[in-house]
Image 1 (spheres, helix red, strand yellow):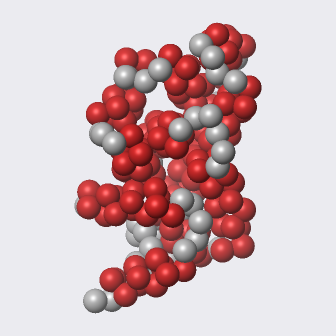
Image 2 (spheres, rainbow, N blue to C red):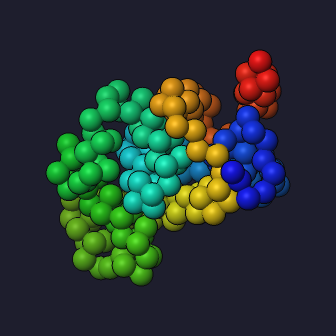
Image 3 (cartoon, one colour):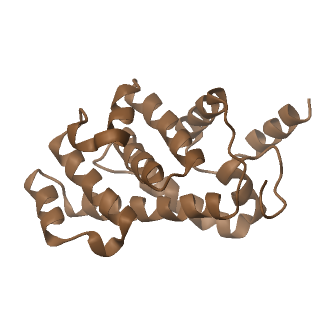
Length: 190
């Protein structure tokens, strides 16, 4: 049960963002830029970063949501599961492994990122911007994970919920779409 009153038809981060739309707007914009904006990393790779950080933070809602989005964007589900269990042996590029290693360090403590981890990424072709964006995505998802769990937001258990959420994320990105909120409300009351 959430610690503050949230709309019951909007579980997880969705209800929290709706609760304070003024604070939600800049967070949504940043997320949209980082995960859907112009980048040399694919949307699927960026969702893998969000998934790994959320998994390591044990945030079930965010892990499930971003696993679903990553699976859709990658066109399969094995890679994401392998990244969560052991990204070093997952079927991703050496550059992606190095960036995931940086994301995992950020998740623990930003000060854990060191010159060696940065050089590893650069040595396998990561650009300064890719390194920057990886650190920022990891930090942003630490915020999201702590926001969802810190206010005990509702975490649905049904996999079908996350499949639908993954579809919304990959179709609409991270922008607020009022028609979707109205549809969710109608579905909850029917």
